[in-house]
Length: 123
Image (cartoon, helix red, strand yellow):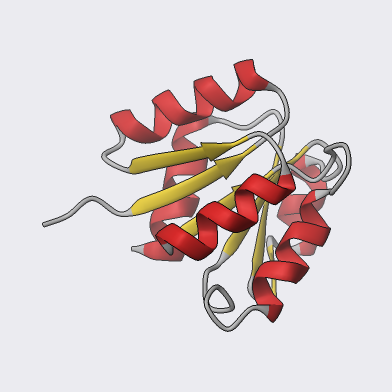
C-alpha cells in the first residue's frame, strides 16, 4: 500500500524538519513548504491526504492558505490541520479540536498525540 502524503507548512525550518522526521518515522510521505505560495502550489500539484499548517507565518498566514485551498476545486476536499501556539491544550480539550474541514492541535504537541490525530483524520 502506498504511503499517505502529507504537506507540512511552517516558516521555521527547524520546526518543519523535526515535524517531517516524526511523520516519516510514522510511515507518511512528507512534502514541505516554508511559505503559503509554495504550499498552495504543492497542494494543487501533489494532492496530499492532509495539509498541516502553522497559523503565524509572514506574508500569508495559515488561515489564508486554508481558505485558498478550500476555495480551489482541486484542493477543497483536503483536510487542514493547524499546528499552532495560538490554541492552548486546555482550549483544545474543552472547545473541541475540529471546525469544518479544519482541525487544531496546540503547540507544543506530544508527538504521539499528533500522530493519533492525523490517523483519526486521514486513516
